[in-house]
Amino acid sequence: MQKPWLLFPVMAASNGTLVHPAYFLLVGIPGVGPAIHFWLAFPLCFMYALATVGNLAIILIIRMERRLHEPMYLFLAMLSTIDLILSSVTMPKMIMLFLMGIQEIEFSVCLAQMFLIHALSAMESAVLLAMAFDRFVAICHPLRHASVLTGPTVVKIGLAALTRGFVFFFPLPFILKRLSYCRTHTVTHSFCLHQDIMKLSCTDTTVNVVYGLFIILSVMGVDSLFIGFSYILILRAVLELSSRGAALKAFNTCISHLCAVLVFYVPLIGLSVVHRLGGPTSLLHVVMANIYLLLPPVVNPIVYGAKTKEIRSRVIHMFSQGGK
Image (cartoon, rainbow, N blue to C red):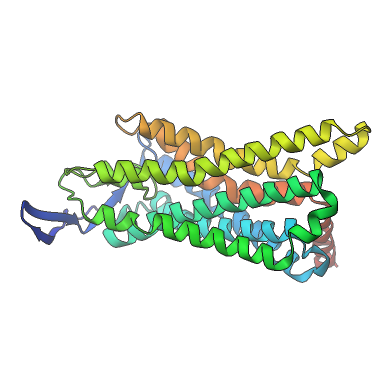
């Protein structure tokens, strides 16, 4: 049974009192009944298990294998760490929602989840950019690769990605707290997003709209432009190779990263566009948000495990040892 709504004033202002709900209600998938939600919980559990095991396996393999302590694999370990945390921030609550119908999420917990989702997404975007730079240097300037991407440089890039994600998205919970929520308190996704919470406010959201647009363009927008530019240079260098076999071999090292970029950016761009167009949240919004958050942690370890010979052979070795 749903609880009655709990509202409480949190700050007295000269023009009235700001009101925050004690909790929000998560919907799941609009128009889908509890029975279907229940059955959808099982593939979601499988996806969470796959994301957890796959990303943990990649992290442990790279940590144990000293020959994998190279920039490409260290960036992959960062990507897997982010995906592991991101899936743990979103999927357990979704499973509880789908399996047991627990819709309530406390106001402060919702803001914390929202911050982690956006900050981790920004960190993932930065790591994907770093991986594109690694491929650019390896293919276009192979003799300089070892001197450009040294161990300390890789660590600095990782710290920069962490810092940028934290700094840019840290204000979001605070600019949401300055709003008053006196309309419906139903969040139309299975998790908390800035755009979704902002729409529930009955006060002016201009600051939220402007800042949200600013960070999406200055973080993910800039990253995607640089990734695209890197691949233009990579493609030009590959096409200039005299041997077709060498060209295919060089470009084949980018396939896994290209898949990760597409899985991350295509749903993100689509989700941003439909949110900026306004209007009520539709099934399209929800499906795209679920793809954007749930697919990368599941797909990335599968793609990198299948395409990266060193990781694939290590996984096969682990399973063969376990079967004896």
